[in-house]
Length: 439
Image 1 (cartoon, rainbow, N blue to C red):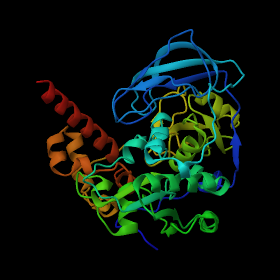
Image 2 (image 1 turned 180 degrees about the vertical axis):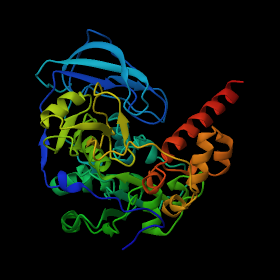
Image 3 (image 1 turned 120 degrees about the vertical axis):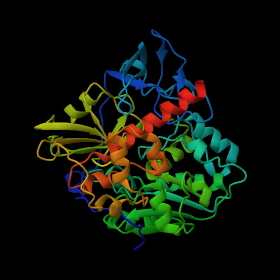
């Protein structure tokens, strides 16, 4: 089976939740909708405290092309425009607080019924942009931007990422099993926008029932490709390399090798937006780990408090760490005073037994991180540079090519937090660039 060079084989741990059908999460009484749920320029709130809003109503306007609006997850009244801790950055960020009225009424004109096959490319792109769709695998890059490559870039490959290689998580797997038509419908829409007559749906071989079902359901122009089980098989650049043999150049993007990749959940959201006008106000999320009493896959509204989610799943059991996402690339939280976001593919609750909180030591130059790195970097050098805050040295050793997959940290016998060092170095580099630009 097709794969890439490097990578690791961490325990899958998907048995905790993979066989649990998607459960509808009940409506919360209060929603906390973060305005910044995408990469790129922040959006600006266009509502104020006291306003009545309806489900699907636009709450913010983008302040640039690489940006995306957020929408009301239900009907109710704006309680406040405040700030709360952002689960990804850890910083205080603008948040729109909504007291639900329990009616869950749609805003005027939604949902609507239309046939994407007779819509123009411009109409389809407009629907995707208006719906605020972002990459739902966790990257949260605005989808309309990905589907708008520069004219000088020739796109010949569209890949649907159904690999879901991250341990514990099964949200995309359940989506493909239970709602394949949404995934395939969104794939056809993206193909039409890009002007392609073929696409590849990539699924890791540890999901044979999803592979079989998708092969039965997919039209002839969508090829279902099983992949070798290996982490990070679902990382964009590794997926492209495994399927096409092409290597995204250093500092480059998938479009530089003629490829566009979208997550399976993103394709489903594309279909909802184009066929029904529905904005991205809910998603499928895996709530899993041995620290939660009843692991579940849930369909949950954006802005739902995590406390409500944990209570719905039976509450915590000897919980030592709560992670937004999976154990490899997810972000550990210092508080449960946070809410579901567009990119929240999972809420992972680990027990102390499942969490490595031991101290790290100096690099022993064993080379395991180099062998595991799917980007062919030298993580040990980046790690040492991080300890000394030497961001320029790190940049000269391809710091910005690191995809932060965590493979190096996983195999390190010295327990060095290499990805933490990488994030720190990238922050130093951004700060230096901003200072230089300001000067």
